[in-house]
Image 1 (spheres, rainbow, N blue to C red):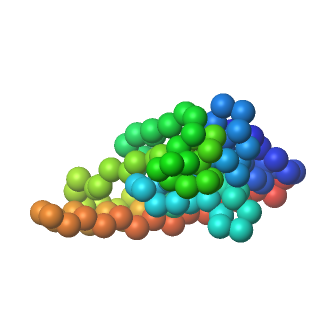
Image 2 (cartoon, one colour):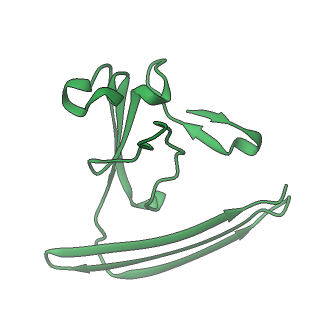
Length: 124
């Protein structure tokens, strides 16, 4: 992972010395890389608690995944919710840091859905 910019605004993921444009990031098989720049800012659209495992394909995966997987593939796999629940989380820290998160999960036999929203902010 390479962090760039003031306050580490952008984080790129690369595998074995490749560039960010040569590493494909997937979430449950869906591409997360920006189509125009190839960047991925490491903000997953699911809560970290929902990630079941991370699979890393080292080396060329371009025959299976396309030209943006020359260096490798990082595949995040999220698990479906096991029960219906609502979670709220808030946190405060130094330098004006604050965080608010909410997630809701709905689970029935044969169907599940998860919604989440979060906000991380710092003034310094």
